[in-house]
Length: 422
Image 1 (spheres, rainbow, N blue to C red):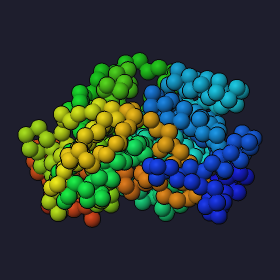
Image 2 (cartoon, one colour):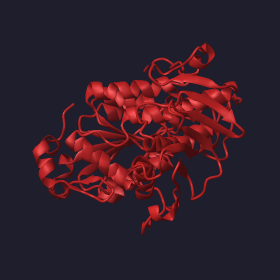
Image 3 (tube, rainbow, N blue to C red):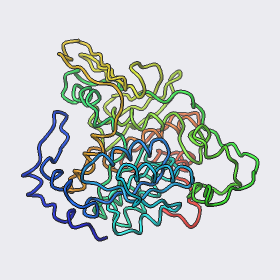
Image 4 (cartoon, helix red, strand yellow):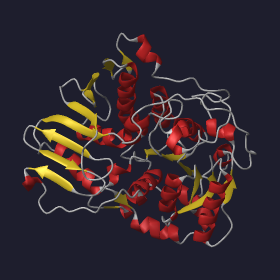
Protein backbone atom coordinates (compact mmCIF):
# COMPACT_ATOMS: atom_id res chain seq x y z
CA UNK A 1 0.00 0.00 0.00
CA UNK A 2 1.48 3.34 -1.07
CA UNK A 3 2.61 5.66 1.71
CA UNK A 4 2.86 9.43 1.65
CA UNK A 5 6.26 10.90 0.80
CA UNK A 6 6.91 12.23 4.31
CA UNK A 7 6.16 8.81 5.74
CA UNK A 8 8.66 7.18 3.40
CA UNK A 9 11.36 9.68 4.34
CA UNK A 10 11.48 8.47 7.93
CA UNK A 11 14.58 6.37 8.56
CA UNK A 12 16.10 4.70 11.55
CA UNK A 13 18.94 7.24 11.56
CA UNK A 14 16.65 10.28 11.49
CA UNK A 15 14.67 8.78 14.35
CA UNK A 16 17.76 8.33 16.51
CA UNK A 17 18.96 11.84 15.69
CA UNK A 18 15.68 13.50 16.65
CA UNK A 19 14.22 11.37 19.45
CA UNK A 20 14.14 12.25 23.11
CA UNK A 21 12.66 10.22 25.94
CA UNK A 22 10.15 11.50 28.46
CA UNK A 23 10.05 10.66 32.17
CA UNK A 24 7.57 7.84 31.55
CA UNK A 25 9.77 6.21 28.93
CA UNK A 26 7.52 7.33 26.06
CA UNK A 27 9.30 8.41 22.92
CA UNK A 28 8.61 11.77 21.33
CA UNK A 29 10.08 13.09 18.11
CA UNK A 30 10.32 16.88 18.42
CA UNK A 31 12.43 17.62 15.35
CA UNK A 32 10.55 15.22 13.11
CA UNK A 33 7.14 16.43 14.33
CA UNK A 34 8.19 20.04 13.74
CA UNK A 35 9.21 19.24 10.17
CA UNK A 36 6.04 17.31 9.45
CA UNK A 37 3.84 19.99 11.00
CA UNK A 38 5.06 22.31 8.28
CA UNK A 39 4.19 19.82 5.54
CA UNK A 40 1.03 20.03 3.49
CA UNK A 41 -1.89 18.01 4.90
CA UNK A 42 -1.59 15.60 1.97
CA UNK A 43 1.94 14.70 3.11
CA UNK A 44 1.04 13.91 6.71
CA UNK A 45 0.21 10.45 7.99
CA UNK A 46 -3.32 9.70 6.79
CA UNK A 47 -5.71 8.49 9.50
CA UNK A 48 -9.08 6.78 9.07
CA UNK A 49 -11.42 6.37 12.06
CA UNK A 50 -13.83 3.42 12.18
CA UNK A 51 -16.50 3.66 14.87
CA UNK A 52 -17.62 7.10 16.02
CA UNK A 53 -19.22 6.48 19.40
CA UNK A 54 -18.09 8.30 22.52
CA UNK A 55 -14.77 6.51 22.72
CA UNK A 56 -14.07 6.89 19.01
CA UNK A 57 -14.68 10.64 19.17
CA UNK A 58 -12.47 10.98 22.25
CA UNK A 59 -9.50 9.10 20.83
CA UNK A 60 -9.92 10.72 17.41
CA UNK A 61 -9.45 14.06 19.12
CA UNK A 62 -6.02 12.86 20.27
CA UNK A 63 -5.13 12.02 16.66
CA UNK A 64 -6.35 15.44 15.54
CA UNK A 65 -4.03 17.11 18.05
CA UNK A 66 -0.94 15.41 16.61
CA UNK A 67 0.79 17.80 14.19
CA UNK A 68 2.05 15.05 11.88
CA UNK A 69 -1.31 13.37 11.19
CA UNK A 70 -4.34 14.17 9.07
CA UNK A 71 -7.69 12.55 9.82
CA UNK A 72 -9.00 12.00 6.30
CA UNK A 73 -12.01 9.73 6.74
CA UNK A 74 -14.52 8.68 9.38
CA UNK A 75 -16.95 5.78 9.40
CA UNK A 76 -19.98 4.72 11.40
CA UNK A 77 -23.12 2.71 10.70
CA UNK A 78 -25.15 5.50 12.35
CA UNK A 79 -25.69 8.53 10.12
CA UNK A 80 -25.89 10.88 13.10
CA UNK A 81 -22.52 9.71 14.48
CA UNK A 82 -20.57 9.75 11.23
CA UNK A 83 -21.88 13.19 10.27
CA UNK A 84 -21.04 14.55 13.70
CA UNK A 85 -17.54 13.13 13.38
CA UNK A 86 -17.05 14.67 9.94
CA UNK A 87 -18.25 18.02 11.25
CA UNK A 88 -15.76 17.83 14.12
CA UNK A 89 -12.85 17.05 11.81
CA UNK A 90 -13.83 19.72 9.28
CA UNK A 91 -14.14 22.33 12.01
CA UNK A 92 -10.71 21.43 13.38
CA UNK A 93 -8.99 21.72 9.99
CA UNK A 94 -11.14 24.57 8.68
CA UNK A 95 -12.15 22.76 5.49
CA UNK A 96 -14.59 20.14 4.16
CA UNK A 97 -12.03 17.51 3.15
CA UNK A 98 -12.92 14.71 5.59
CA UNK A 99 -15.11 12.02 4.02
CA UNK A 100 -17.84 10.15 5.90
CA UNK A 101 -18.52 6.47 5.19
CA UNK A 102 -21.07 3.85 6.17
CA UNK A 103 -18.80 0.98 5.13
CA UNK A 104 -15.33 0.65 6.68
CA UNK A 105 -14.15 -1.32 3.63
CA UNK A 106 -14.14 1.95 1.69
CA UNK A 107 -11.63 3.40 4.15
CA UNK A 108 -9.42 0.31 4.01
CA UNK A 109 -9.30 0.55 0.21
CA UNK A 110 -7.91 4.09 0.21
CA UNK A 111 -4.17 4.46 -0.52
CA UNK A 112 -4.06 7.82 1.30
CA UNK A 113 -4.98 6.16 4.62
CA UNK A 114 -1.82 4.95 6.38
CA UNK A 115 -3.29 3.98 9.77
CA UNK A 116 -6.71 3.36 11.23
CA UNK A 117 -8.26 3.93 14.62
CA UNK A 118 -10.78 1.14 15.32
CA UNK A 119 -13.34 2.15 17.94
CA UNK A 120 -16.32 0.01 16.98
CA UNK A 121 -18.21 -2.15 19.44
CA UNK A 122 -16.31 -5.16 20.76
CA UNK A 123 -17.92 -7.42 18.16
CA UNK A 124 -15.88 -5.90 15.32
CA UNK A 125 -12.48 -5.25 16.94
CA UNK A 126 -10.73 -8.40 15.73
CA UNK A 127 -12.41 -8.63 12.34
CA UNK A 128 -11.67 -5.06 11.29
CA UNK A 129 -8.11 -5.35 12.63
CA UNK A 130 -7.48 -8.40 10.46
CA UNK A 131 -8.89 -6.73 7.34
CA UNK A 132 -6.95 -3.54 8.04
CA UNK A 133 -3.71 -5.50 8.35
CA UNK A 134 -4.39 -7.28 5.06
CA UNK A 135 -5.04 -3.87 3.48
CA UNK A 136 -1.60 -2.66 4.58
CA UNK A 137 -2.71 -0.35 7.39
CA UNK A 138 -1.20 0.11 10.82
CA UNK A 139 -3.75 -0.16 13.59
CA UNK A 140 -4.72 1.47 16.86
CA UNK A 141 -7.60 -0.67 18.13
CA UNK A 142 -9.72 -0.04 21.17
CA UNK A 143 -10.11 -2.73 23.80
CA UNK A 144 -11.22 -5.40 24.44
CA UNK A 145 -9.32 -6.92 21.56
CA UNK A 146 -11.76 -9.76 20.95
CA UNK A 147 -15.05 -11.40 21.87
CA UNK A 148 -13.54 -14.91 21.62
CA UNK A 149 -10.00 -16.08 22.28
CA UNK A 150 -9.37 -17.44 18.77
CA UNK A 151 -10.14 -14.02 17.28
CA UNK A 152 -7.38 -12.17 19.11
CA UNK A 153 -5.00 -15.08 18.49
CA UNK A 154 -5.59 -14.57 14.76
CA UNK A 155 -4.86 -10.84 15.14
CA UNK A 156 -1.69 -11.50 17.16
CA UNK A 157 -0.44 -13.95 14.54
CA UNK A 158 -1.08 -11.78 11.49
CA UNK A 159 0.60 -8.57 12.65
CA UNK A 160 4.25 -9.77 12.65
CA UNK A 161 3.61 -11.86 9.55
CA UNK A 162 2.50 -8.79 7.57
CA UNK A 163 4.86 -6.37 9.32
CA UNK A 164 2.07 -4.19 10.70
CA UNK A 165 2.20 -2.00 13.82
CA UNK A 166 -0.67 -2.72 16.21
CA UNK A 167 -1.36 -0.84 19.41
CA UNK A 168 -4.27 -1.92 21.61
CA UNK A 169 -6.10 0.91 23.37
CA UNK A 170 -5.03 -0.26 26.82
CA UNK A 171 -3.82 3.28 27.44
CA UNK A 172 -3.17 2.83 31.12
CA UNK A 173 0.18 1.38 30.08
CA UNK A 174 1.04 4.94 29.08
CA UNK A 175 -0.29 6.70 32.21
CA UNK A 176 2.17 7.65 34.94
CA UNK A 177 0.53 6.31 38.12
CA UNK A 178 -0.12 2.89 36.60
CA UNK A 179 3.37 2.74 35.12
CA UNK A 180 4.85 3.58 38.52
CA UNK A 181 2.81 0.89 40.28
CA UNK A 182 3.90 -1.68 37.70
CA UNK A 183 7.51 -0.54 38.16
CA UNK A 184 7.31 -1.22 41.91
CA UNK A 185 6.10 -4.74 41.19
CA UNK A 186 8.54 -5.54 38.39
CA UNK A 187 11.56 -4.09 40.17
CA UNK A 188 11.15 -6.37 43.19
CA UNK A 189 10.45 -3.52 45.61
CA UNK A 190 7.30 -5.32 46.80
CA UNK A 191 9.22 -8.55 47.30
CA UNK A 192 8.03 -11.80 45.74
CA UNK A 193 4.60 -11.15 44.26
CA UNK A 194 1.71 -13.12 45.76
CA UNK A 195 -1.56 -11.58 44.55
CA UNK A 196 -2.54 -9.28 41.69
CA UNK A 197 -5.97 -7.69 42.09
CA UNK A 198 -7.87 -6.59 38.97
CA UNK A 199 -11.19 -4.75 39.23
CA UNK A 200 -14.00 -5.93 36.98
CA UNK A 201 -16.60 -3.45 35.76
CA UNK A 202 -19.63 -2.98 38.01
CA UNK A 203 -23.19 -3.04 36.75
CA UNK A 204 -23.08 -5.85 34.16
CA UNK A 205 -22.15 -8.96 36.05
CA UNK A 206 -24.17 -11.39 33.94
CA UNK A 207 -23.69 -12.34 30.30
CA UNK A 208 -27.01 -12.56 28.47
CA UNK A 209 -28.17 -14.32 25.30
CA UNK A 210 -31.58 -12.64 25.12
CA UNK A 211 -33.48 -12.55 21.80
CA UNK A 212 -35.73 -9.50 21.36
CA UNK A 213 -38.84 -9.20 19.15
CA UNK A 214 -38.40 -7.96 15.58
CA UNK A 215 -38.96 -4.29 14.78
CA UNK A 216 -39.08 -2.38 11.47
CA UNK A 217 -35.59 -1.98 10.02
CA UNK A 218 -34.35 1.60 9.50
CA UNK A 219 -33.03 2.63 6.05
CA UNK A 220 -29.38 1.70 5.55
CA UNK A 221 -28.47 5.38 5.20
CA UNK A 222 -29.78 5.97 8.71
CA UNK A 223 -28.44 2.80 10.33
CA UNK A 224 -26.75 -0.17 8.65
CA UNK A 225 -27.95 -3.14 10.70
CA UNK A 226 -26.11 -5.75 8.62
CA UNK A 227 -22.76 -4.00 9.07
CA UNK A 228 -23.42 -3.51 12.78
CA UNK A 229 -24.04 -7.25 13.20
CA UNK A 230 -20.92 -8.04 11.22
CA UNK A 231 -19.58 -11.52 11.99
CA UNK A 232 -22.09 -12.24 14.76
CA UNK A 233 -25.16 -14.44 14.15
CA UNK A 234 -27.99 -12.95 12.14
CA UNK A 235 -31.10 -11.86 14.01
CA UNK A 236 -33.99 -9.54 13.16
CA UNK A 237 -33.46 -5.89 14.09
CA UNK A 238 -34.50 -4.47 17.44
CA UNK A 239 -33.44 -0.95 18.43
CA UNK A 240 -32.21 -2.12 21.86
CA UNK A 241 -29.52 -4.46 20.51
CA UNK A 242 -27.10 -1.67 19.43
CA UNK A 243 -27.42 0.26 22.69
CA UNK A 244 -24.35 -0.06 24.87
CA UNK A 245 -26.36 -1.08 27.89
CA UNK A 246 -27.54 -4.14 25.97
CA UNK A 247 -24.75 -5.35 23.68
CA UNK A 248 -21.96 -4.88 26.26
CA UNK A 249 -23.43 -7.72 28.35
CA UNK A 250 -24.59 -9.97 25.50
CA UNK A 251 -22.68 -13.14 24.68
CA UNK A 252 -22.73 -12.49 20.92
CA UNK A 253 -21.05 -9.09 21.21
CA UNK A 254 -19.07 -8.82 24.44
CA UNK A 255 -17.78 -10.45 27.61
CA UNK A 256 -19.58 -8.15 30.06
CA UNK A 257 -17.89 -6.98 33.28
CA UNK A 258 -14.82 -9.19 33.06
CA UNK A 259 -13.69 -8.06 29.60
CA UNK A 260 -14.95 -4.46 30.00
CA UNK A 261 -12.51 -3.44 32.76
CA UNK A 262 -10.45 -6.62 32.88
CA UNK A 263 -8.99 -5.81 29.47
CA UNK A 264 -7.27 -2.94 31.31
CA UNK A 265 -6.81 -4.25 34.84
CA UNK A 266 -5.77 -7.81 33.99
CA UNK A 267 -3.46 -6.33 31.36
CA UNK A 268 -1.72 -4.29 34.07
CA UNK A 269 -1.49 -7.37 36.31
CA UNK A 270 0.08 -9.38 33.51
CA UNK A 271 2.60 -6.59 32.92
CA UNK A 272 3.40 -6.28 36.64
CA UNK A 273 3.93 -10.04 36.85
CA UNK A 274 6.26 -10.25 33.83
CA UNK A 275 3.78 -12.62 32.19
CA UNK A 276 2.91 -10.64 29.06
CA UNK A 277 3.45 -13.71 26.87
CA UNK A 278 1.80 -16.41 28.95
CA UNK A 279 -1.01 -16.72 31.51
CA UNK A 280 -2.42 -18.56 34.52
CA UNK A 281 -2.76 -22.33 34.47
CA UNK A 282 -5.82 -22.73 36.72
CA UNK A 283 -9.07 -20.77 37.12
CA UNK A 284 -11.76 -21.06 39.76
CA UNK A 285 -14.36 -19.09 41.72
CA UNK A 286 -13.80 -18.12 45.34
CA UNK A 287 -16.75 -16.33 46.98
CA UNK A 288 -17.58 -13.54 44.54
CA UNK A 289 -14.11 -13.49 42.97
CA UNK A 290 -12.63 -15.21 39.92
CA UNK A 291 -9.11 -16.48 40.51
CA UNK A 292 -6.39 -17.34 38.03
CA UNK A 293 -3.21 -18.92 39.36
CA UNK A 294 0.11 -18.93 37.53
CA UNK A 295 2.40 -21.93 37.65
CA UNK A 296 4.62 -20.19 40.24
CA UNK A 297 1.65 -19.75 42.60
CA UNK A 298 1.01 -16.03 41.97
CA UNK A 299 -2.73 -15.31 41.76
CA UNK A 300 -4.61 -12.80 39.62
CA UNK A 301 -7.95 -11.99 41.28
CA UNK A 302 -10.85 -10.49 39.35
CA UNK A 303 -13.00 -8.71 41.90
CA UNK A 304 -14.83 -5.56 42.96
CA UNK A 305 -14.17 -3.25 45.89
CA UNK A 306 -10.84 -1.64 45.10
CA UNK A 307 -10.48 2.12 45.47
CA UNK A 308 -9.31 5.11 43.48
CA UNK A 309 -11.78 5.46 40.64
CA UNK A 310 -12.38 3.22 37.65
CA UNK A 311 -10.07 0.39 36.62
CA UNK A 312 -8.09 0.17 39.89
CA UNK A 313 -5.43 -2.46 40.49
CA UNK A 314 -3.56 -3.70 43.56
CA UNK A 315 -0.27 -5.60 43.57
CA UNK A 316 0.72 -7.47 46.75
CA UNK A 317 4.11 -8.93 47.51
CA UNK A 318 5.80 -10.49 50.52
CA UNK A 319 7.34 -7.14 51.50
CA UNK A 320 4.75 -4.58 50.45
CA UNK A 321 1.83 -3.58 48.26
CA UNK A 322 0.65 -0.80 45.95
CA UNK A 323 -2.84 0.22 44.84
CA UNK A 324 -3.91 2.83 42.28
CA UNK A 325 -6.68 3.72 39.83
CA UNK A 326 -7.99 6.32 37.43
CA UNK A 327 -8.30 8.98 40.11
CA UNK A 328 -4.52 9.23 40.04
CA UNK A 329 -4.36 8.45 43.75
CA UNK A 330 -1.84 5.86 44.81
CA UNK A 331 -1.07 4.20 48.13
CA UNK A 332 1.68 1.78 49.04
CA UNK A 333 3.17 -0.06 51.95
CA UNK A 334 5.70 0.84 53.09
CA UNK A 335 4.87 4.46 52.33
CA UNK A 336 8.52 5.17 51.62
CA UNK A 337 8.03 3.42 48.25
CA UNK A 338 6.14 6.47 47.00
CA UNK A 339 8.67 9.11 47.94
CA UNK A 340 7.23 12.44 46.79
CA UNK A 341 5.33 10.99 43.87
CA UNK A 342 2.08 12.68 42.87
CA UNK A 343 -0.05 11.96 39.81
CA UNK A 344 -2.93 13.58 37.99
CA UNK A 345 -6.16 11.63 37.66
CA UNK A 346 -8.03 10.57 34.55
CA UNK A 347 -7.19 8.27 31.69
CA UNK A 348 -6.31 10.43 28.67
CA UNK A 349 -5.19 8.56 25.56
CA UNK A 350 -2.79 11.23 24.28
CA UNK A 351 0.50 9.58 25.30
CA UNK A 352 -0.69 6.19 24.10
CA UNK A 353 -1.67 7.64 20.72
CA UNK A 354 1.65 9.45 20.41
CA UNK A 355 3.55 6.29 21.30
CA UNK A 356 1.65 4.42 18.57
CA UNK A 357 2.47 7.06 15.96
CA UNK A 358 6.14 7.05 16.93
CA UNK A 359 6.19 3.28 16.43
CA UNK A 360 4.50 3.63 13.03
CA UNK A 361 7.34 5.93 12.02
CA UNK A 362 10.19 3.85 13.44
CA UNK A 363 8.64 0.36 13.02
CA UNK A 364 9.51 -0.33 16.65
CA UNK A 365 6.98 -2.42 18.59
CA UNK A 366 4.64 -0.52 20.95
CA UNK A 367 3.95 -1.33 24.59
CA UNK A 368 0.50 -2.84 23.83
CA UNK A 369 1.24 -5.16 20.93
CA UNK A 370 -1.33 -7.58 19.56
CA UNK A 371 0.39 -10.48 21.32
CA UNK A 372 0.47 -8.68 24.67
CA UNK A 373 -3.18 -7.59 24.37
CA UNK A 374 -4.22 -11.07 23.27
CA UNK A 375 -2.59 -12.67 26.29
CA UNK A 376 -4.31 -10.32 28.74
CA UNK A 377 -7.76 -10.63 27.15
CA UNK A 378 -7.24 -14.41 27.08
CA UNK A 379 -7.15 -14.40 30.88
CA UNK A 380 -10.52 -12.64 30.80
CA UNK A 381 -11.97 -15.07 28.28
CA UNK A 382 -10.97 -18.14 30.27
CA UNK A 383 -12.30 -16.57 33.46
CA UNK A 384 -15.59 -15.98 31.63
CA UNK A 385 -15.67 -19.62 30.50
CA UNK A 386 -15.12 -20.68 34.11
CA UNK A 387 -17.99 -18.38 35.06
CA UNK A 388 -20.36 -19.60 32.33
CA UNK A 389 -19.73 -23.28 33.05
CA UNK A 390 -19.74 -22.83 36.81
CA UNK A 391 -16.67 -24.96 37.45
CA UNK A 392 -12.86 -24.74 37.59
CA UNK A 393 -10.78 -24.75 34.41
CA UNK A 394 -7.25 -26.03 33.90
CA UNK A 395 -5.54 -23.97 31.23
CA UNK A 396 -2.47 -24.56 29.08
CA UNK A 397 -1.16 -21.10 28.06
CA UNK A 398 1.28 -22.65 25.58
CA UNK A 399 -1.31 -24.48 23.48
CA UNK A 400 -4.11 -22.12 24.56
CA UNK A 401 -6.50 -24.94 25.33
CA UNK A 402 -8.57 -26.03 28.32
CA UNK A 403 -7.01 -29.27 29.52
CA UNK A 404 -9.28 -32.29 29.15
CA UNK A 405 -12.40 -30.15 28.72
CA UNK A 406 -14.07 -30.26 25.30
CA UNK A 407 -17.05 -28.22 26.44
CA UNK A 408 -14.81 -25.39 27.64
CA UNK A 409 -12.70 -25.53 24.48
CA UNK A 410 -15.79 -25.00 22.32
CA UNK A 411 -16.28 -21.65 24.05
CA UNK A 412 -12.84 -20.41 22.96
CA UNK A 413 -14.16 -19.56 19.48
CA UNK A 414 -17.29 -18.40 17.73
CA UNK A 415 -18.52 -19.02 14.20
CA UNK A 416 -18.24 -16.06 11.85
CA UNK A 417 -21.30 -15.22 9.76
CA UNK A 418 -20.62 -15.28 6.00
CA UNK A 419 -18.99 -13.54 4.24
CA UNK A 420 -16.73 -12.62 7.17
CA UNK A 421 -13.84 -14.81 8.24
CA UNK A 422 -10.79 -14.76 10.50
